[in-house]
Image 1 (tube, one colour):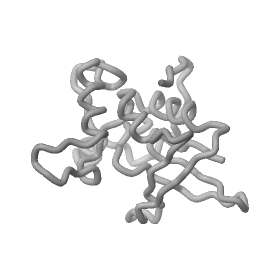
Image 2: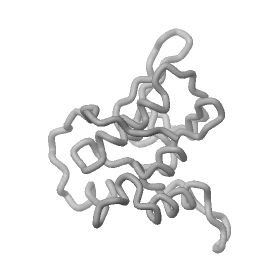
Image 3: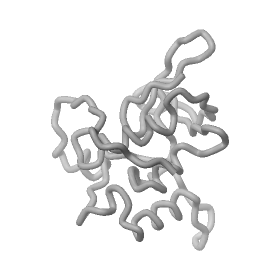
Image 4: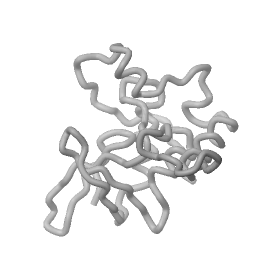
Length: 154
């Protein structure tokens, strides 16, 4: 069972119904207080709600969260979010091995931007890491409310 915290973080229950906080590997979704933050959360809810997820851990982050890829019915959840335009590929973790090589996440982000999907529909989307380093994030964490409009899933 999965409970969605925001567009790139979930709580995943194990067989004993103990929850672990999981940060999706290779992506960064808008914060709840940013444009498209609630929509990113809603999209992740629609992808995972009531479904069995497969998790492949990549380790832990500095906050103690498990960093992992998630899949539902063989579909990479992080890739689906980037493809929909509700998250950025996080190049710090989604790296290429050769200069001319791309990754599925990089290709998905490029395609979403070209098609002006999700956050790419706006004039200048601000990546969450730029917002965090720019000091414009509120010191209070805002709960991520689900938007009233439905978000289409692939």
